[in-house]
Image (tube, rainbow, N blue to C red; front, side, top):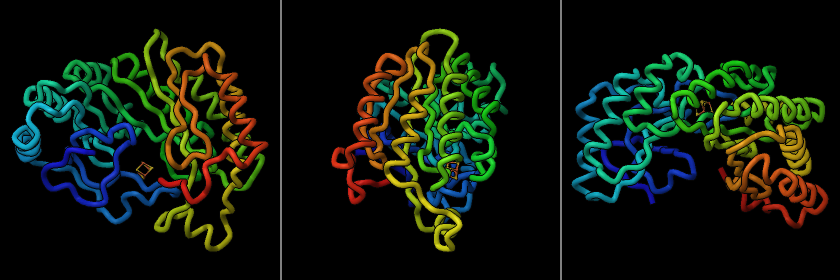
Length: 304
Ligand code: SF4
């Protein structure tokens, strides 16, 4: 259960692993409009300008929940767009008010990570900001362009290395099925995504996270409209799993500390372990899923 306070505007989203975090509104909506995403389409993007007002929320949570707060997630879709000084001030205040706080995180667009200097990222990490969740979706520049992500493979690799250097944990989210029912595009999407994962590996041992999700075509997104006019044909479950197989297969055997997780409810199979340690086992499970539909999560139980 999330801890909430203040005037968050519905709908509210957060990463699954932040299910027990205090949610603090720093921005409202998202700065981008990716073609597959309908999450914030009903919200006009804005930044909460009054820092004292945000601090009030942080303080009010202490009054409501005492010292229970261990995680804080800065809402909404891209709180990392906010100026470094503001994020540092808010992060420091969170730790000052909540003595048992272990984690402060937000969604972050890679371009906004790149815009921040290495020094700013380091100061943010030193203030106690611990993790960014980055929607990568694909390593294939063509796919990234078509879905309007606004980032290239090079930029994602650069943003990840900046975070590693600063000591901010990197959690990258890929999107299986994004290319639709085109075997050639799907294969390239998987190969380039594996290549990007290899390029994002930290130079020194540390934990980092990769979580593939599976596309669900939702009303309000551009892909939904394309599907209605037959311009976009979704992948079959078998194609999605073949994509996952290729992606895992082509990740480097030298990866270390990479926690790989497909537990998200949109996925057909749940994998959790470490790349490359568990790679063979992952491939065996995915191969079984490709050949045996009975082991897959049924469509009615898939959700975003
Ligand atoms: S996928 Fe992420 S960056 Fe793109 S519109 Fe949705 S929330 Fe914003």
